[in-house]
Image (cartoon, rainbow, N blue to C red; front, side, top):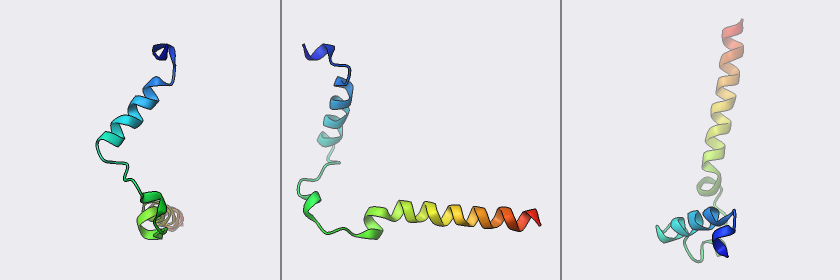
Length: 60
């Protein structure tokens, strides 16, 4: 009956990531490190602000 489950591919995808070692047991119990956990978000924010400033600088 599991072959009729439309979300079966999601479960297989999650299992594939876990088998490859993406999931690390015990990771959810560690302290939050802002740079490690949100570094990509910080970098995207800085890049967005830089592009915003450049657009206004070039528009003058």
